[in-house]
Length: 373
Image (cartoon, rainbow, N blue to C red; front, side, top):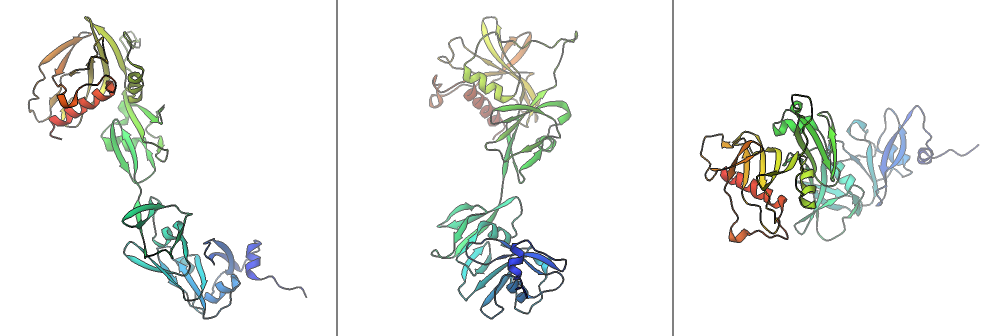
């Protein structure tokens, strides 16, 4: 008569029968997960041990990893409820290692444990990761990393909700999921997606997208969504020409392209104007979007950019007067409101480091300051 095949060997060979089913076991410090076969309808702790080739005696430890988080000890003759979890830890002896996850403490039969197992014990959600706290410093534990529980002290673990960032027209949003529909991001920012052309910028690459497009925030860096007004055409159906009547610095042009906004370089009565269209103002001002004009001196960047100008004129929503906005400029037949805002001795212009980008920071700072931010 041919010898019978042990259940654990049958499982490793993929041999299953209609009256058997697979469960998963961990049987050593490598924390490798293996499939073994047990009776399909009813089985006890001893059946798990037998399937893994272990004797059913008092030295054996069987722990069930619960789907809801935590561990449950399974006795030799105890019926197993697979609805609670299908992964089991098998060990021998009385050596236990202690660690904590949040406010809960655990005893583990092996010196090592993986980040994945800690996540399962803590019932971490898909948008959460595990961090280990050592000497007051938190470090992310990757799923496949093994933690040595024999090191001095009791290990402390916490589960932390991941945050993904998305910049929508200059404002950073935080999301607790890695995939965000463009329409949802625009709704949170208060924009109607039907009113705009939408530009997605990922690592400097720009793509026109629809409101239904799903942005994957797991890409390194912060994804940006920029809004552009629908193309406005002249009465004769011709698209207006974008004017480039003088040249900016290469870094300035790259910055403006990254903004995703239409811009022009215009000569007017001997002055050089940079016009940035659809510039969004913070909540607290009307209108919500304007044309921003910057006066670019012929000797720029040796000569600083000073002040800034808006059309239509900008006012506070609460009616409070905005001081020092009486300067006027006419560009292409449009009258602009000049904001008389100047650098101080402590923030003097540096021709080697300052440019359009840094002056835009000054514009944003001045707008926020008027709102008391």
